[in-house]
Amino acid sequence: MANAEASVSDQSPLDLAIHHPTLPAVVAERLRQLIIDGTLKPGTWLNERDLCDRLKISRTPLREAYRMLASDGLLTLQPKRGAMVIELSAEDIENIFDVLAVLEGLAARSAAERATDEELAHIAQLHEQTRDYYNNRDIRAYYATSMGTHIAINRAAHNPALTHAYDRFNLQVQALRYRSNFDLDEWTKAMNDHEAFVGALLRRDGEEAESLIRGHLKGRKAYQMRTVRTAPAAAS
Image (cartoon, rainbow, N blue to C red; front, side, top):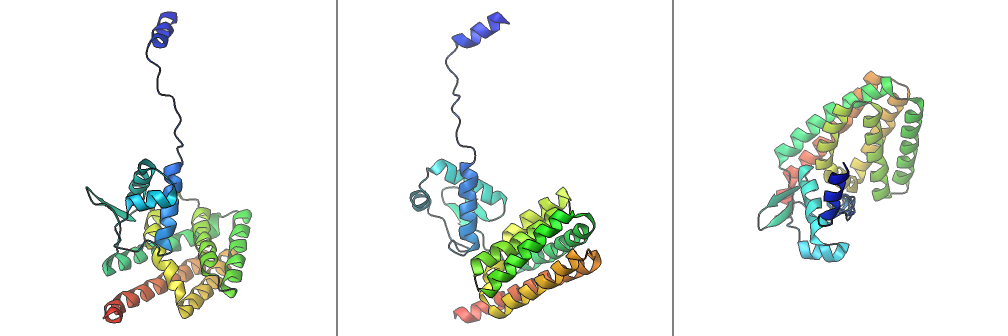
């Protein structure tokens, strides 16, 4: 053992520098938010030099963040061209919302059965904050707590496989869900939907909570499909 230790010490020093392991994740989260709020629009090729300058980072963590977002289904990567924000087709949107309706329905039913009292209290608190932000017409804060409510319900289902599937599909349509609140009628409808399905969940009525949250997602899908169909006419 002593000889082995001596031989290691005689070798050239190993590179033991600790590179900040969370920087690419932080960059990816920042880019994710820019995609959600529409700053980085679907179909946009990302300017690597500009983003490095704006985010005050080198290209290495930026490119790693690109790979993370590509894995999430938010970016597409092409050699020599870089990264582009994915633009979902009408078929993509329809299919993803159909899947989300099933996943969120299962989460609501399971959460009604499995959530702890503390988890339900947290969901109730998020919902109260969501209502306050809606009343104050604070779209950005509303969306954060509204989506936080959906995610908290998913986590309260205590089903890791369900969470894994939900997170991937949900990420792909967060920008669409955020922008739908620019339509006041749609925003109001979403708020009323939240009142209904959160109320059912807090009563631990899993069947009603599942039905209501699936209806909520179907309504969101219908709005997105109407928007997709009218977009060419509006642009002409």
